[in-house]
Length: 493
Image (tube, helix red, strand yellow):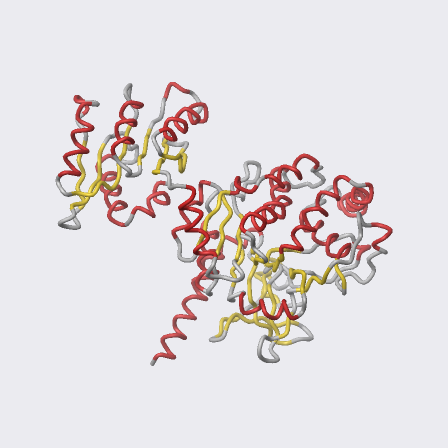
């Protein structure tokens, strides 16, 4: 956690902290200032004398700054004068602050957070991260909201079709960790393929905004519609409550994001997806097709009651997202909507002994069939007038699982789930038992390819590492990157 927080401070500061770790193990029970001279790149560490707290604090800061040095970092270990020390440093420097071993007498750390957060805010700092193990708080100088917004908008203007990833920690979900390695891999891969990335997250992944072509937003900035859904949501799934509600709320957050930033369209990917194309290349096509949106729509029968579609890769317009928000609310507040959800429970979950249920993928399926025109993914869907809340044929939703080539006859596809065949050739650890199966892909000079029955070679524009497969997503991304770099060098020769 410390290393992640320090990424934006530069290599010198990180090395300084490494030195301090070597001298003081990892308890960080010390006080000191890290600074660099303007005349050299040397990093200097000055420790505060414990017998002179807090009188030497101001003196030391002044000495450092008047001596032609740039203050890089401040670390404090709480004592009886912790508040006074923090106030002195915060009033005299804009350098980041770490406070360790916070208020041991306070019991649970969260009992103290509001006090520290308020104190920091008054002094122009904000709480960035919390480390429970060492009762450690990370603070950074606030950037004006106006400047932040201007910087964000400058980055957004670079793209007609920004890529949006939503990821935050969910307390009741074991795999929904705050800052997994695969999240950074997903962001880097999308960025390396020419996309501008909007990360909607929480304080734990704010540091990822320092990656190239990335804009970070706190999900709490876009909670109005999410709160509306939470007030009517009914939990009808064997998955945990926070996880399932959080998945449902993604549409609501996207609605408020697009409204707030006046975005006409965006491309959403899950945080465990490798995006292998610059999606702006496809924007003209979708506009010519008059697509209302585009996402992953596997073929299925209504009466099998799977009712699954996915926005793991999805082109979404503002008009579409407005209707999706209203439809999601209607599912839980109208007679027709509640009847559809109950049908899913009765026909699917009960027959499978309580496993599964209503999730966001259910809602995407019902939405597309109740509102979209030219629908083909479920041939036996009932008359929408009979089963749908406020049925209305509003627009076309394109299937991203099978697409024609952009400039030639080659086939393209966004991946629904690397663990599922969806007509593609699979590779299994145990071929006889068909266990441990994933799509068989080959890395070639012009992309990542698979083989689909009846179609032949298909180029993947994304790979979705759903479930446990996400933990080998970094290695696949590295292999793809190595292949692309090797091909680039070959062409230069």
